[in-house]
Length: 250
Figure 1 (tube, rainbow, N blue to C red):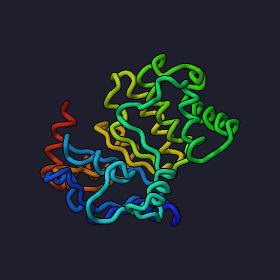
Figure 2: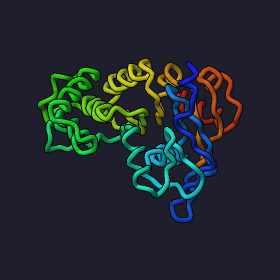
Figure 3: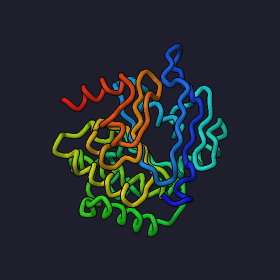
Figure 4: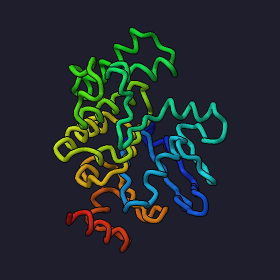
């Protein structure tokens, strides 16, 4: 990585998150450099999704510090808006507006947030539909597309805001097996282009081939972090070893 890429774009310091009495995140520390690809894995309920939802302020952390590209996430709406302009998010469900065509779904956020012109928004939308290899679907409605195609639209929609960071929350978990690879291929292309990415996924092949670092979470804590070759071939924690045994043998 270059010196610029080594600068942290995401910093979490001692982040705690409670849902009532339940502590979902316990003193989480994580630093992500510009251009870094981080895969977060762990058992169900380990806090993975809560962690990236806090990064986008979809969930409010209770204590600790979260800084995204120089903006600390506080109750200040301006800071939250600034972060959301720079952070794209792709969910398990596609969250497309069913009454809008594909291109209209892509053009909506830039129009509302960036106040750019219709012509510019349309050109940007088509560029990213080509990027995810479905420009021919622009005038269709979401219901006319397969699950894999809809998830690629969701990725293109996030890219239309020209984010500095992309967050993926188990983007393939709602897809049929034959559709998973088409979404992962788009994500691999993004990674090759240098996009900063945090991805919660159980796709360990993707983690091994794309990630700069793999983070294992359990019971709201980061248990282990390391480069893929170390994480998969020589994990330190017994909890990590057990998880890998369970997930890699299924």
